[in-house]
Length: 548
Image: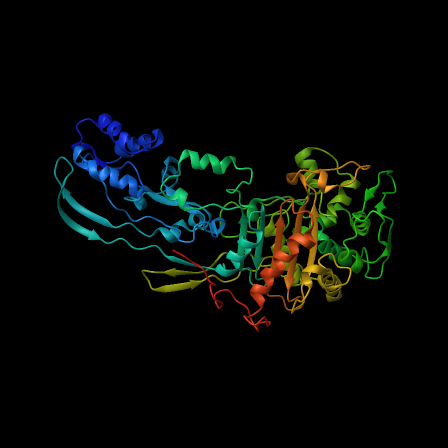
């Protein structure tokens, strides 16, 4: 619905009478008045966008009563798959005052929308295109007399994504109505195959201005659908980081594959009476590194962390991307936290305590990570320390030039292994997590046609006292433990790395691991259930998503 001001005798009266036919909010009237001040009197100014069929019919019947009021059709962004991959794509929305301060006005003349979030915002300059130009002769009132010169507009470029639509849709379906996130990537090049955050929302709501009621519902929802858990969710990684700490122990010669630690069900520091408990109350007995990873023995990693020390732990984990942004090509990523002695002194002005080192070693305490960081780190472990920057765009198609530029993988500073045998010790243990008789994710490995290297994790949402026991039946769901699982496959020829978190899902082996298994099956197996010789997004049905 548009209005030409110079044809309207009484604007306030016209707006009031239109408001009797269709709902017009105060914010829409305010936006219209601001836009009117930037336009010449004879130019039409939008008042309402995205009219429903019923509203169009109601206005069309009465339009003869309104001088200077028109109903016009406009091209607009539409997301045909609705909520699918919204946390990847983002959305466009109306240009507001903040946008006007940041953009070059001449490049957006005649444009009403701009990328607000996700790929739409990050690649705005590629997607936007160039406005056309008319050099005209005008009279004193500003009306066009004749066109002297004209340059046609140039369309925006197309993005070919690394996201596999089929895998993305499956990930969203598997998490379903739970709160959670999933990231799958190719560890050989950093291509993100699926990036899921649930629940999600329909980006079409934002294109032409979301209503206050709808936005309030999204903002106040306890499920936080607007929150991109995959990029900005800070979760304790729990036991998913034990393989990396185990590798650190081997690399720093703090432990060996044959070193035995006795686990009675708790651990005590030499200078402290406090008991740091194992998840297994009766203990694991004498245990070596391999079984400590497979069975997720906390006591082994308390002891290992104490001997490693927080400084070496922090340095080692930083080499795998913890505590820093990955640099993924989209908006909103937050780095999470790899705690250290220096961090605590700088941020909290406090000394570091040995007990904090122990709980960091089992992925708790101040230690946090995003699902993207977990997927990237486990992918780097799969590649023996070689790490690639995660990216969502495979190539950019320059429409006007009829060229396509492929985005080359960007290798980050990798970790150089001191001994290949250290990597084998850790990965063999992770294989036993899924395929061994005592592995914590053995149920997810039943009937699998390839080897999976994985690690389960459980992240505490709140602390319990030393003399208390965790009883999920007595705890509200929103306070129950988070369930995590990280994995790569095939274990000794990795093509996919996956990180899954299900908030308040409690058990990584029974909740998160089956989701990762389904994702890896979908990526690695053909329609007959056989292992493919190669697996690349875009070569598969539904793969290689486009964004224009």
